[in-house]
Amino acid sequence: MLVVCAVVAAFSASTLASARASLAPLTSRASGHVTAVDQNADTATVTWDQGRATIELDVTPPPVGTAVLVGYDPAEPSHAVIPHAVTLIAADRSSGELLFIAIAAALMLLVTLIRLFSRFGLTRRPPVQVPVRRVRVTSGLMARSWLETEDIPRRWIPVYFDPALVTLPTPSTIALHGAPRRHRLVAAVVDGVVLYPSGRVRSDDPRGRRVDNPSVVDDSVRARAASVRGLLRQLRADIVLIVPAPVVGFLWAFLDGSGIWSWLGATVITAALALWLAALRGSDPS
Image 1 (cartoon, one colour):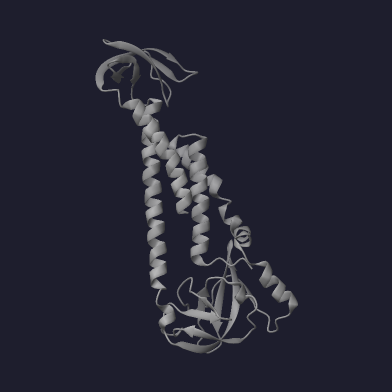
Image 2 (cartoon, helix red, strand yellow; image 1 turned 180 degrees about the horizontal axis):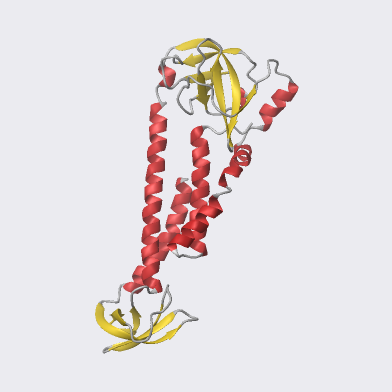
């Protein structure tokens, strides 16, 4: 997510730098009038006492005779802008995009750090042997792994996925770092693999389509565990979550009045955000 934000921010920063470089020489101001317009090219020709310039606009040109404020280069009066000039709008959009990206990246980093630090000391708790069963619950477009305690009252512990979960027989006694009935966050150890919680312990059954692990682990189960390893498998499981990204990008470009590059940037950031949220919540690719 941070890499995607950095790449998109680099493009926005490049556009902003180019726009600012074009605007920097425009140190003089004057009142002028629109003397001609080209509706097809969205340009307006503006005349004032010190000069005349044809300026590309981001909106429909104003009618001939409209009074406008002109910013121009005293050394080259034909280099000028008026309100809604393409250069001004490009600078404004790039600034807004950079601000949005910075806020999104900061929030993502903050949430990630909070998630890491909240789980940092879980394994320091003394382990307790507890009989559990692993259940895979699909809700909406995402599936998650849960460890359901066998003791009454039952508790459900969401954990980040590891292939070791696939070969965990139902039921199995494993080590838990923490008491599910007392602690909100509980880590588990399955076949020597520490599984950190992807959320708080629940006292009610997670909603969704439930699939329990088999009681006997055979070769087909081991083969399935081997097939769910790797980043590519995780991406294939989460790819459905990025389907709305182009629509979100289109809405952003439409509301912002921008073009294909803004659509592409918003689409990429939305897709990266969806994948990050899936990883944060412990998406299960099995």
